[in-house]
Image 1 (spheres, one colour):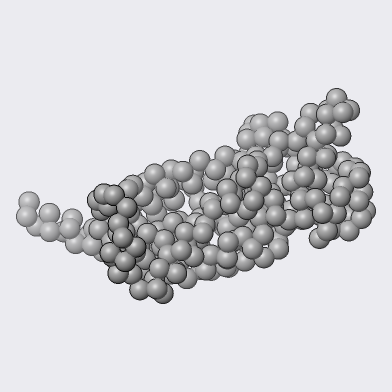
Image 2 (tube, helix red, strand yellow; image 1 turned 90 degrees about the vertical axis):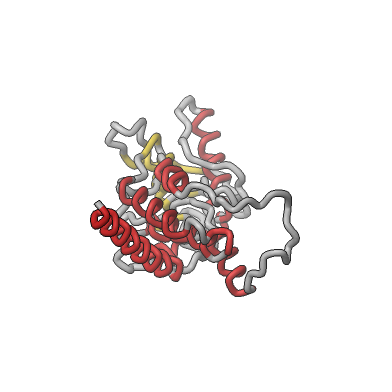
Length: 258
């Protein structure tokens, strides 16, 4: 396959950046999208030009590093598919392809197609730890968990933190990511003691990081490569309301006692 690829090139966070057009020749239709970029980089290096910087790691749809907007859609727009799982057979010989980094204020561009997603790390850190002392590995049936709840917890835990939900949202919201991280703990008994505190802390950290608000476009759900349901956002909103009201009641009691 021979392709025309328009790639976003940006030297650093202060550079204005621009789209640069490349001709990529000899791409195998069974190659992944990242392998196509590898071929392009090999051609650039052979000509003495600077290679394109892009994030990648496992290339198995697990790590969430392959954060690319392809033809205007995070990860290329195919259901349950990360960029590294997207194959060139989905494109046509001679096709033009536009490749950009995640576009969100909370994800500043570091270089070319690489963005800084440390804001996600700060949100996770704000959630703290589960204080339940598990000790050695318990028996699988020691803590009864209804199968429906266990399944929903596992579904939420499938989130790989790639940020596609943020890139797809017109507001740059991280609600689906944060809600998934909360849901996979709050569906289980071990996550209950800190449930209110954790919810309030992580939502506060999300707002402080500069992510936008959710306005129910649900583009996040459509772009998620792990098919995380928007239902987790509703659960997080309920938990946050309860936590906020509880916090206000505690403050009122403290003021009354004073």
